[in-house]
Length: 434
View 1 (cartoon, one colour):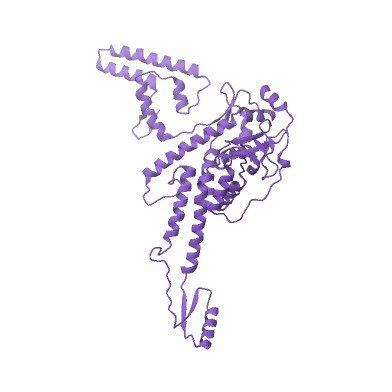
View 2 (cartoon, rainbow, N blue to C red):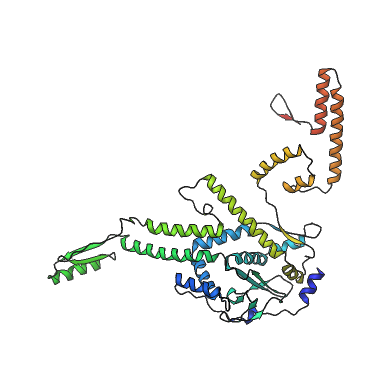
């Protein structure tokens, strides 16, 4: 812990979040043209700026329920896993449990996960005795130059690489997984607009009244009747005019065309975020086997996310920050608790039993593979088990030398009872006697 403390205390921390001039996100209408311009601005070689792109990300994430649900689903898959901290001797450090279960630590893990969707995340930790931090607005981070700007429109700012309490997560050239979803989210928004217009026009009966073009008095009376009889669509057409309504029902009789576009956009976003579609919605061709395969695919993505989170939590940068708060992190590391999948363990046990009959397997393997805690008096219990097995083996050998069949059977049963323990015997009334 001394190594981390010296590193953190050797420099005076600089508070930079308070100097940032924040601007409200742009809520103007977005289309594919805005997306293309934002990407070109973010990928500029000389003056890259992600402000427009992050404004677009903020707009689609906060308004698209399906996309925000996908992000929460992937994030919660990691947040709900149990974290533990072990020292250099692989012993559980209980002093870290309060920190791991705190709301601020959970917020930081969520910030790490969000870097996958936005490309980067940044935090400035507050110096003091309690673990706390302030999120750095992404629009002010220039990961290519490792600088934080005062204004979101500035090209250069304050270097953060040597700041001990500023931690920027992510790759400089990564624009996040939301880049793959932006086009589908914009098309989906347009599809909903067209669908709502379709419902508004054809969702209720259309009233059509024909009148004589030269009878102005009748026209005024009919117009008054339409105005007083409701707000549904109404048309007044002279009898001399030819009128025909092309309602599009030949190719889109009940609005399925709009729904198909929305459904396709949702599926593409599901694949981009979760790697599958069946864990969030079902299709006409879905079944148990297909859903199980998709669940296994998502589990592999979750495992990858857990490894990425651990790489940031166990970095020297973050452990040094925790050491400055007085936490005992010297030589230790964070680890996710191994979860038990009983279906996989059952198949694994059958394989292990067959392998153990061919080659010896250490006891540590059984404890680690099946999540069984090793007892404190393991050596003592192991010795008693070996003595019991040795005694049973000798008894079996002695019983095999017996010539009397009944006596041989009795001794064999006694030897097995000594090794495995006495089995319950059933009484006449059906009760078991132990």
